[in-house]
Length: 259
Image 1 (cartoon, rainbow, N blue to C red):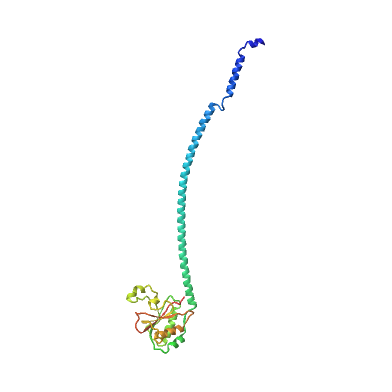
Image 2 (image 1 turned 90 degrees about the horizontal axis):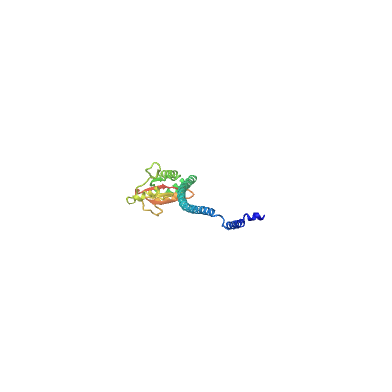
């Protein structure tokens, strides 16, 4: 045993060196330098990559935001065009509806005129004008009045049967008149009844003028007689004058009924 120990006198020293070496190794930081360097390099690459990715993402966000706003602008323009088209269509339909409403109202007026056509009490008219001298007359009617031609014919027959003189064979429809030279432009804008010197509505007795309120005047006698003799829910009879008429002639104009 003593011999074995003496044959390896350096064994205690080697063991101490090995222990010191193990102690030094155990005091090194973890991980090793090689590993730390490798991880550092890789982390740097990741950081640079993330910065570049963030920069690219920022550029993409800004760019796509601009593109998206442009798309919204185009969408708004298309929406505004559609809204304008809808508004135009609505306006067109409103005009058509208004036109249809007016046509319906006119049809109702014409229907009412047909349902309540004006009629002449022949006996009343003859009784009221029997005491006056016969007159030279003409009877005109507005073709827009549904009962105009019928009432005009009744008046024409009643006056002719009383011996009144006329150059007509039958009542005539109203036609455009030139009117006085100084008023010809204005005359073209007037209804046909007013161009003939009559009122726009009802029955009118027209002379060359001037208009008189003398109850003994032939036109006033005829006017009052027609007011009593024409049967209608709403009757309008008035007087008028036409400077272009011949002197001494009486014109009876049958216009539309008062709506």
